Length: 250
Image 1 (cartoon, rainbow, N blue to C red):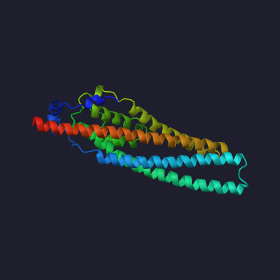
Image 2 (image 1 turned 60 degrees about the vertical axis):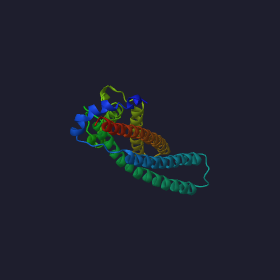
Image 3 (image 1 turned 120 degrees about the vertical axis):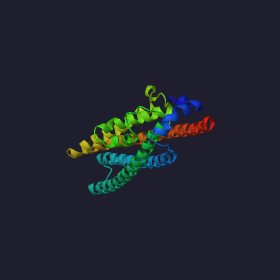
Image 4 (image 1 turned 90 degrees about the horizontal axis):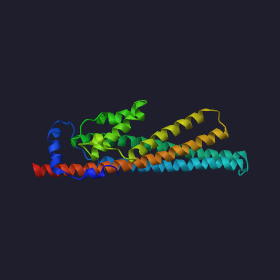
């Protein structure tokens, strides 16, 4: 992963970098371990809920295939099967929505803390504050790219606090953000199809887009857990190095 080598401790240099910033930066280091555990747990639950939703959506597609093949003995039998699947799908979608909203809350806490922590490592020159690293997610249009900019700054400053502006984000971040934008795109396309005249073809198309959306969401949450794990790990080690260096160099 990009810039991992920069995590090697340079204790004396770390202390000299922080002598000024530690007193004027305006933030104190806070451990990311608890927020990470919450993010990972909720993300896992979200992925499970999304998996159940995907299963229900595939079952819905199968219903249409069975109906076209004449598997059902009567229209009433098809109606009963479709109603049962709709109830199951609605419950799965509701559970998925509620859990994913919780993931966004805990993810916001983690993002704020991670963004604040890098400032305690002596990194400066950020374009986005910890508060806005979270807040941009709720601003129309800007939410499509500003949260990524904030996460990129946090990621690079975690690995190279003194030289983060010239560091690269690597591959993981853009892939993660691409899957997030993909879920939004698939969701919007699905909603457009659901508003047109209801036919077997449009329902099938809508279901297929929903399957892709849910699958991308699983990948997105998995990648976010990987990102939060790596940043949590590196920031914890770096903070421990700073404390050790302060003891050594007084």
